[in-house]
Length: 475
Image (cartoon, rainbow, N blue to C red; front, side):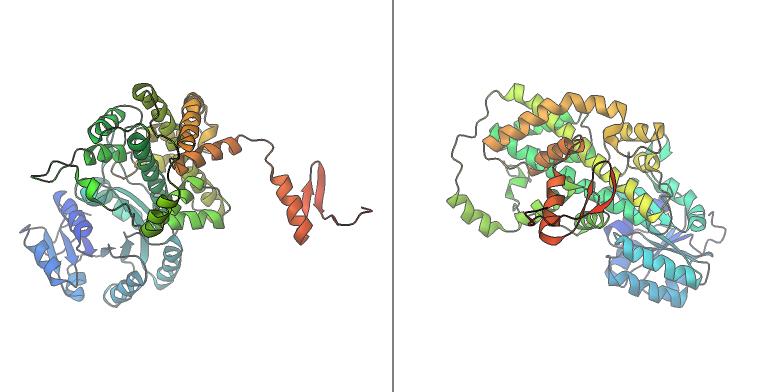
């Protein structure tokens, strides 16, 4: 994709907000001529005011498209939903068959599936690409998850590999798989992100209310953890949040923020997709639910007066207990990744995406929000066994998980005794205990279903489906 005509661009970007503008500058840094378009003239002016010779921004779509060399490559970074469809419709009026359209936003994978089929029929190449790393990642190197048209990816590959983050000399971008695979992988990435953020927030509450630690001491905990096996982007930024004060103020700024968490829906989509596929991802489910509960501040305030804590929250020896919390966090973090990767395994079976789980772990090691030291272990597990159905079954992960079990059991039981909510930790433990449970009590549920609704059941050691008239005294 070297550009011989200096008047034309190799890459076009629609949407010149912070992400779009930063990605455009990242592309330009690597020697490519590129163009941007936005219907907001202020954003266009901001990009043009950068005075970079190889970036040109336009407020007219036709001028923007005409400035691109063929095959034209246009990436959209616009809000998910109907606006993506409307931008595509406009583009089709200006682009030619054989050109490439990339949706780099957080589109729902079912929309990407539909758009891929529609554009393929019309003769256009479509790539649904998840992009992770936030503003800084876009500027310095994101993790990117493209899926869809394989031929289009081969054309895009040189530029994407240059602008991606690099880990051990390898770019954090790779072809994910067929049709909507890229956006499905990004959706699961975001679900894992929800789970990890919930675990960190629950950890903070135990440190603050259970161990009654000062903010500066909590900062030191996260600082220490980020130097060990919990090292990750989210632990790192949490450490920094516990040190950030506004100029001229003596208190941590985050204490001024309301305890009502917002969401853009990708965590919910992960839970919905998992439920549709009957794949359990309870740690993601509870993370979504807790964000929802946080919004009911008025109800929580009233309930706090009605149901005050009955006992002193102070746990005891802080130093000894921090090691148990670290074990509990490690255990639950493993569970969050394991549930997400299991969902990807099952999606691969159901949707025939041709995903490679080791490749996904590999490109998540850098640039993205859920990058962590533990992803090296995940990468190794799937590299060793590409058909591994669940991370809990990997020998190396099994060993480290076993050592963390006492910590998670102590942590969850103590939190319950002291009236501190740790639902993500609790569900991580319950998921594990039932995952290793050869005889779940689901036989009783099947009997109940058959009793009240004649839903039938299966029997041990017998082929077929059965029904019992449970109220027949002579049966």
